[in-house]
Length: 62
Image (cartoon, rainbow, N blue to C red):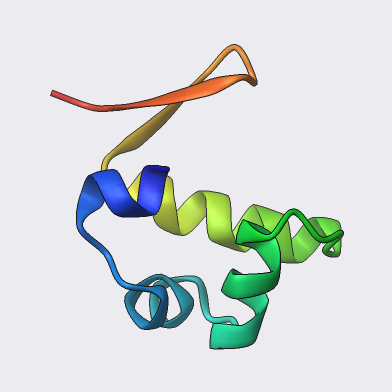
């Protein structure tokens, strides 16, 4: 949801997070990832303007 809200493609997010494209796809399918991988994806989304709320949702920073 966050990636789409930013208008980022899978390749864009993968590059920003420093992970493989397949890793982003696995993440979006809900597969389990290493904590450091999740942290890298989260950091990339936050750097792009996403704010995580209460662990259940996201919004774009204004």
